[in-house]
Amino acid sequence: MIGVKVREALPSDLPAIHALYSDLHDGDEPADPAARAAAERVLAAHPGAHLFLAWADGEPVASCVLFVLPNLSRGARPFGLVENVVTRRDRRNRGYATALLGHVLAFAWAAGCYKVMLLTGCTDPGVHRLYAKAGFRAGVKTGYMAYPPDAPS
Image (cartoon, rainbow, N blue to C red; front, side, top):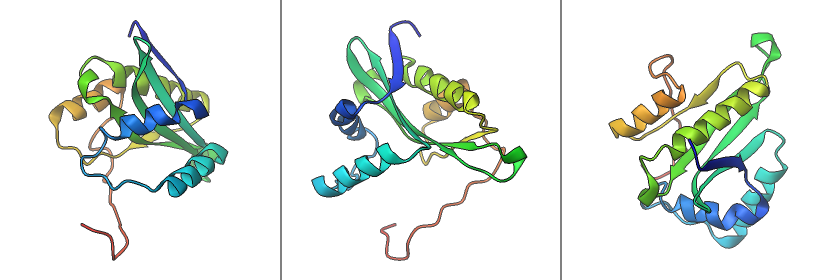
């Protein structure tokens, strides 16, 4: 997409990413500043974690995380896991997330990943069209989730 630039996020981008996350999950529990800072340090130090940010018109419009994880099967090729795909509410349906995910998949393929997985709890058909347009296929495998026994449902 013309006018969209996607790159790995810099430490100075974290406030913009946190602002984007306000559009990720309605009613998401906020992290206290110390916990958030600790998570930022761990994510930055994790060798397989890649936080991406898409920019358009000089402002951040979309983000996601790609984890490139080691693997012992498939010729010991790594696999990827995409999390926290978010586009600013007022900038949705303009192709920003498609451009972001295209960049992320190209990065994963260059890293030797044999597959990239993405789970969504969203039921919006538009979100599913976005993921299909970006190259993800539904119905290939079944995903299961486990949560701690004391987690809110």
